[in-house]
Image 1 (cartoon, rainbow, N blue to C red):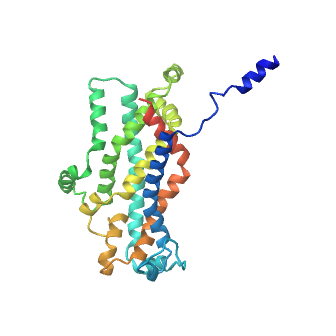
Image 2 (cartoon, rainbow, N blue to C red; image 1 turned 30 degrees about the vertical axis):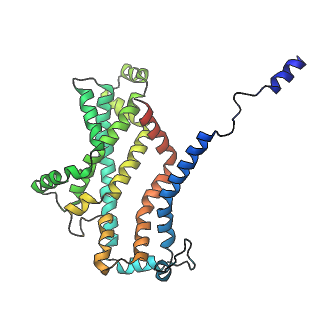
Image 3 (cartoon, rainbow, N blue to C red; image 1 turned 90 degrees about the vertical axis):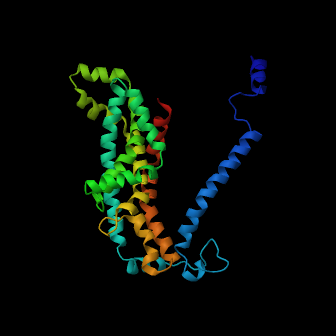
Length: 294
């Protein structure tokens, strides 16, 4: 027994993690470069928002501020006309878009996941394919349609447009999440007298919270940051959103005040950062479930 135990200890364990192979090292280096390339502009904007104008416009600017200041934020609050209105418009449109997209997209996903009808697969993949089409292709058509229904320069029009753009993504995520729910659970609910609507609201939705969170975060980011359709279809402060308001900074001051611009961008990042940090675990689980289960 002693010799056998000694022999087992000497054998290399297959479960013991080995060192990184050259291929893995290359992959990690490439990933690190990609992450740094994406983070550097963001870090530069955040740090520059706390720099005085002299440091921002210096011939040899530094990454860290030599003198930390909130001057850019104070100037933005005092001088940027309409910033509060732009922010409120973005919040209203984005919140309404998330709620409407999740409701309609989840109902459609429930139908595709649990009901079979002729042409369901063709219709589903046609809708999913629309996610990969650039928004510029439908810009003129949407403009004419919204003009006909008098939805231009209105928050309602932006909400409907963003809802239509986000439906395919929500449908793709939630359909796969719904299909991962065991059929036995649904059959048991039917035996207990639960109807189709009851199954959706009392079983599907509570179990699919992680998928809903992932879809909500992605929809929020898309609606909050959308610029092209908003700048095309809105021309007054009552309907313009934050991305359009940031573009109008140059028109107000005849040139870019970069300190104020960086402060404005920082505040525009803030809701997305808070949302992602708060829901990070649920977002990753939901996005993974939607990507793997099919």
